[in-house]
Amino acid sequence: MKGILLLRLVDVTLLLLLSFVAAGRIRTESIEIPVTTSLTESGSLLLPIAATITENGAIMVDGRPVPLLTIAEQASARGVEFLVDADAEVDLLLRAAGLLQEHGIDAVFLVETRQ
Image (cartoon, rainbow, N blue to C red; front, side, top):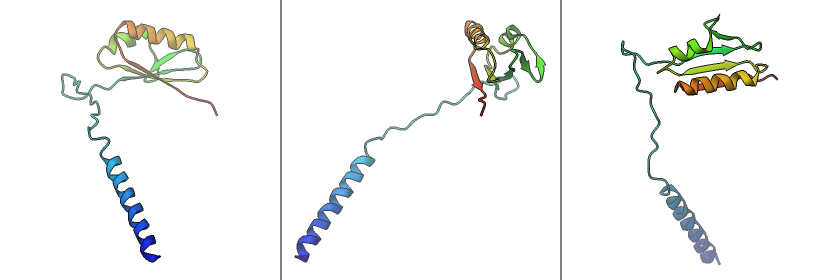
């Protein structure tokens, strides 16, 4: 009786071992993470312009109001990151995204949420 139980235990252990070996070999290719290689003339990485859109629709860079067209002209190779107030008008976000897209500029909109 003990021999039969031991045989079943060995069988189950071998099946588990084979299943783990098979699962470990399913994914063999590596994943490449994209890395920014754009450099300025001075040799440093280009960081995106950090802008804020307030609840009343003002677009601010470094605490000063800046027209969206000026941001689009300055961000040609850098991109723009917008930190948007939760109460800002969606129409303004859509216009900003459209204008930047027309200029071929990448933009990210991070919308703050209210709790």
